[in-house]
Length: 174
Picture 1 (spheres, rainbow, N blue to C red):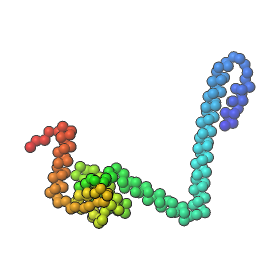
Picture 2 (picture 1 turned 120 degrees about the vertical axis):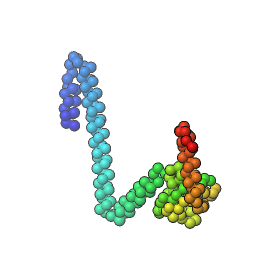
Picture 3 (picture 1 turned 135 degrees about the horizontal axis):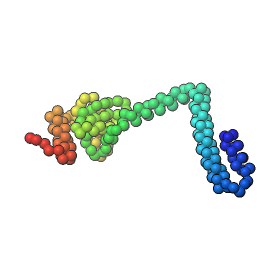
């Protein structure tokens, strides 16, 4: 900052009419460099204040800090559990194998390979991991479980694969 102030003072004190456009250009460059440094300084200062506040809360109210950190970790885990999965919708049905049942929800893999996320509170009774079921949602958004036999699930998987191949223009030899 002192270098910028010294260069600015030198340019301001130089009043010769020779090189006036060059001097104005140099002053504009100094001003933009100053603004960039000031912006970085303010961001660092703000981050330092945030860290100081966090340390203060951690020191003065460790229980509140621990509760906050635990809640943040739970939210991150919940978001990662649901990441990439389709959320189940009312009026639809989903057939496939149950791959996970946790306190966060139920994950089901359909014959097309898609993961579907189901909320726990929509089930009357929870399925078990490994069950091959059809989950049907009524208009009230409540889930009904129907056990699917292996032959039907295999047929649906083959049908989904056939449709995928046909959509890509792949010929099938029979």
